[in-house]
Amino acid sequence: MNPEEGRAAPALPLALYDRALSLLHQSPDGLPPRRGHSLAERREPGDPQLPWDEARKAIRAALDPLPDDSATLHRRFARLGVRDRHRHLVHSTVAGLALPAGQWTAARSLGRALTRTGTTVSAVASGIALLVRLGEPEDIPYLFTLGLLREFTGPAVEALERLDRQAAGVVSLAARPHDELRPLVRALCARDQRAVQEELTAFPVSSGRVGAADARRVVEAVRLPRLLDRHPSDTALLARASRLLVWMGRSHDDPTDLLAYRDAPELYERVVTRAGLLPPSLDNHAALLSLALDLSSGTGVLLDWPPGRRTALLESLGRLLAEPRWASTADIAGGDADDGVRARWIRCTGRRPFALPATAGRLHVEMVAGDPAHSKQVEARILIDGRPIVPAVFTHGPVNGPDLLLEDGHLRAGPEPREVQLAEARCTEGCCGALYVTIRRDGDQVVWENWRRSMSGSRETPPEVLPHRFDAAAYDAEIARAETDRSWSWRARAVARLIKAGLIETPDLLSRWDASRGWISSGLEDPDVTVVTFWYVPGLASGTPDGADSPLQFRWDIPDDGTPPETQAAAALRRLADEDPRTYGRVCGGTRKRAQELGFPWPPQAVGGRRRQPPEPRPR
Image (tube, rainbow, N blue to C red; front, side, top):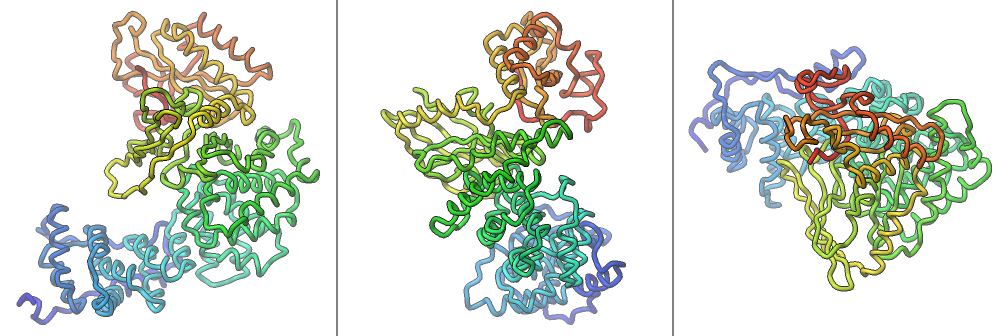
């Protein structure tokens, strides 16, 4: 022990746990503010700014050997310059400590002392990190209260997930900035079961702010399977359960939320077997169809199912939705435009999840257009031996769509090996990465190998994916089938495909206007609008481009006029040949400075200096 550690400790300030209790008692409704209470970081005059590498070494030194009491760790941290701002380093370092079983009792006692009496953020963070590994039920109240402090929410939830998932869900929801969920959280904290049931079905479902993570936390916090069992005839509760299950499985969010929910098969069982109690409606039909899509080719396939049970539930949904009273919910003509789009989606998609071949071969590519009320993306889901490969190995975004994987022939196996991007993070590859595989032909086989997940700055270790081999003839036939499958599509999407094909065949239609092809598809905001984007660089046609590294992006919207796609696409291509598209398109990307230089108005909805757009190729 360092001589300084043996000196009498000065009077310590109030423990952070006690401060958290005091803040909670002062809250007018018994809840922390949105995002939780926050502790102001204390910084003494002349406090050195310890670089991160040195801070990590200091933390390791303070923990070696593991102190016998919390006061010793406080003194070591103070002497070595470990401060509140280092709490994340403290947590990761403690999490990585080698703790032989013989030290578990002492380490658990230290963790408890630090969480109950710790007076600095770094010390309490150490205690929570120890209890992540060694906590027991008696630690739940302390972790729960500390989790309501913003600085400790993540680590406390991590610790509570091992001990009490309901408590973990409540803490996580209480710290999220969603006003819609606060009445539910208030009822959960008050342990008012009647209010929990009422608030669960009352919060808005169309806000768009409740994602997969929120849905999982709600389901865990209310213990939804048990709640359904207590109220078996409550159809409003059953309908809300179906939607929460859909939200958990949404592939454009994080699929790990559904996979991390231990009771997911049990909840599917409750919802699907009781689905016949629901009143037939457009909303309920869309929710049940979305569940079927997930059970047939989505993340739901990857759950730990008893043999044959997933297939049985899927068949049950198929029989129910085929009944005339359910099928008639999609017979909408006129009225609300959004309802019309959704009804058309049901009519187009309604039987696809139930028609998947039982023996589709090693590889099957399934086109899935999600419920247009919640998702505007189309996925080319890749199933290998009946299991979707992308959500199994990449958690940051859905598989790419047919316009990227199929329309350009990227999945074809050519004579030379080719690396193909299968999925990209919803926030862009530069942020959270993408999933790649190399496709090559090897005699009478096609090989998918060298799986690679690009992760910018991530320390996360991706799961290892072994090479997959396919019979070349069967592989070629499946890719050809998928490339020509249009049964999932709709008119605006077909118009976009035909325009793109025309521009590939005749690139001069754009290049004559100093432009190059960009993203072309149906609109994300309105699926009945074809969106054509292009990049403009002055002088491109003459071979002397001015500012090629700073192109200006334009967007041209083509509303569906009801005529055949071939007619609409031909008209669009003729207009591109005859009229400069800059006169009827509008700026949608690039930079404000470049738009001003070239004399074009910058759109008011731009954020900062650059518009956000769907991922698309930059001009070559």
